[in-house]
Image 1 (cartoon, helix red, strand yellow):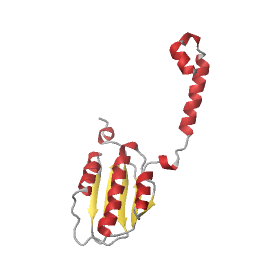
Image 2 (image 1 turned 30 degrees about the vertical axis):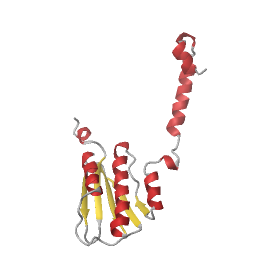
Image 3 (image 1 turned 90 degrees about the horizontal axis):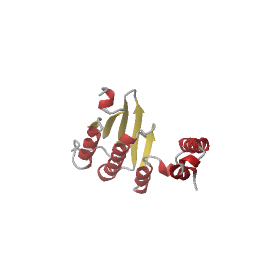
Image 4 (image 1 turned 30 degrees about the horizontal axis):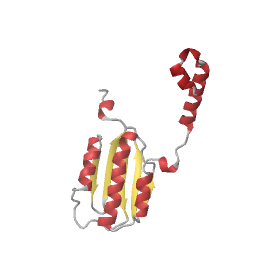
Length: 163
């Protein structure tokens, strides 16, 4: 039987100092444990892009803020899909930079430039909703090449304003 179980069932018969020592040791091990590659955010999305024939070339580190991972994952998936479907490219470039308040992500590719302006429907429209719903902004340009810039706040607006 474990110390935790004994403590819960018979607290007066438990060596509390020993139990605390074991808990602290376990917590220390958990804090120092490195995640395996497959456990990292974006692993599945980036691997899937490769399986589709698109190399994702990343400059900088993608944010690992749990609040933003879903938004960024969606942006990567939509970008890779559009590189294949519209640009007929095989390389998706993502540049990630960090300012004091924000993360700035730039998406470009090696495919052909858009023939006309970009129409935001489907994936891009849904992505814009997610980005703006997280307090961020999204800008798209099509000349001279396609570029999508997503700015995401490090903190939610309520946290920034002290509310």
